[in-house]
Amino acid sequence: MNILVDSLSQWLISEGYTVFFSEWNSSPLVKKTTRKGKKKQLLSSTTFSLIHATDFADRTEHDIIPPLKAGAIVLADRYIYTAFARDVARNVDRQWVRELYQFAVKPTVAFYYRVPLEVSLSRILTGRTELKYYEAGLDLGLSNDPQESFRLFQQRIVSEYESMVEEFELTAMDATLPIPEQQRRMRKIIRPYLQGVRRIRASAKESAWAGLAREMRPTQVDIVGRTGR
Image (tube, rainbow, N blue to C red; front, side, top):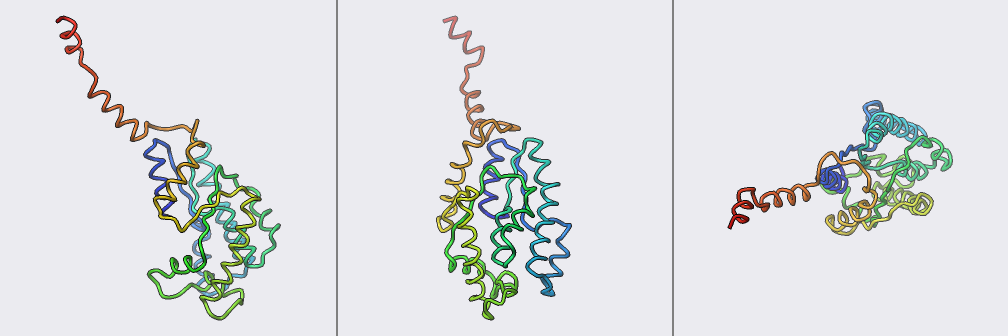
């Protein structure tokens, strides 16, 4: 799970909310097909798009809509905007992709994390020596050099994201800030939307204050004794 999403989830749970999580490309319905297609480099841009849409449709039906109907909060690590950016960067028709996902639930808040390309590349290569074939966009023939292909591919993706900020009212965040600061800003943005959302228990802070209040409350014997004096 993305560290920011994980931290946000833990905070919401500590505040007494029921939280569900859904991750991009995680449906068991397509995992095997995706893995096989990537390994043998069989996936065209349209095939990639359709597989991700199938994954998203399955997760929407089983992992997103039911919890929402039950009053829970659903956190998604990447949403339809990921498809809008990546698929169009792979030369899939922009309008066709949007229509493909027209069944999607409109999110209450959608965060877009801006990060310089060099920082993105550095983060991806942390702990490994090379980029994966599709990750680098090598299927597009932009460059034979994986890192250069990655830069060109990411430039296309970033361009699509930037064009969507106003169109879909994405909340742009500076992804170069320290994680605690990003998390603080996320919580500040989200907090107003929590008004009226059902909680299954009091928050950790409220429980602590209630416990302290019980400890400080005078007992009946104390009250009687003081009254009698």
